[in-house]
Image (cartoon, rainbow, N blue to C red; front, side, top):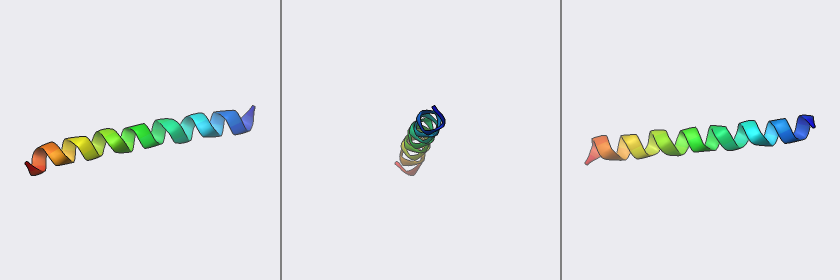
Length: 29
């Protein structure tokens, strides 16, 4: 169960990073 929660948090973390990268790209353009 702990491992599952960890994977879920990591997935959400990656998604947040993607969102921030997208916003940065928009600002760059």
